[in-house]
Image (cartoon, rainbow, N blue to C red; front, side, top):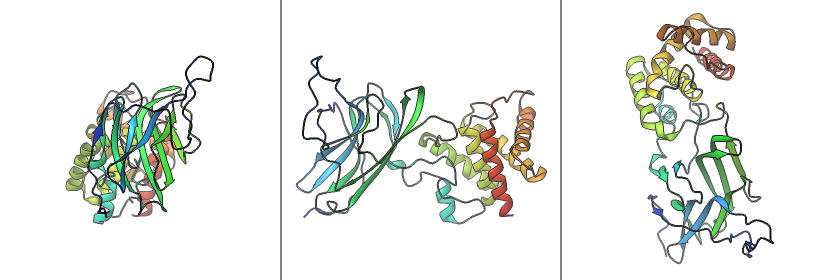
Length: 301
């Protein structure tokens, strides 16, 4: 009997070709003869690869002509709240949550080539056959009306995915078997990319050292908002924490009553550090999130 203690290891397979058949149909795609409807092929799909009599490896396959910046076979978060981390909680467990992807970075793939498959998990024919299997997968790719989007796939199946399992059709249509297939294009919905994980952790550690955990969490949450919305300017994550600290201090001192008052505070901070009027992209949505953070902080102090 196979050892069921599975330890994840990354692996890639090249030149993976879509066969035109999935577990959802025993029939191949119609011939591309000009008389039949156009062939439907997936941009992304899951593929099972047998490794022994009991186990299959599950691969995510990039069936596009573009190299994917990354493939994250885990949940991505846009905020501390999204990751179930809390302001004011200085416990080690909460600090760990605030780092967002500390338990997942070993599963992150970068620069996934066209027709390349990356291993995201494993199924066991006996132990997994009766249970529901779930995979969360997020990849950056274009959308119908956007050059950049974040695609979020939620796969839930009993006993595995079979030989091939489409995630997104080439017309950007959602396969009917998918639990969810979300296309995120708005700044308010965008997660913090795992590519800034180390940079963000470095900022967090530096904030803890200078401010203590409680205030560091508040400033980190503010910096997350500045980064996601590109407030002020499109700065690297580790170059906007100075403004985040000033905004945190002014929020605590001036006690704004609404998002509009927060916007005035943010504008004043960027006017101080840069030329007056330099920061023009201070959205209402960003200021609303900052106001919510301030209210949360006030409730705990």
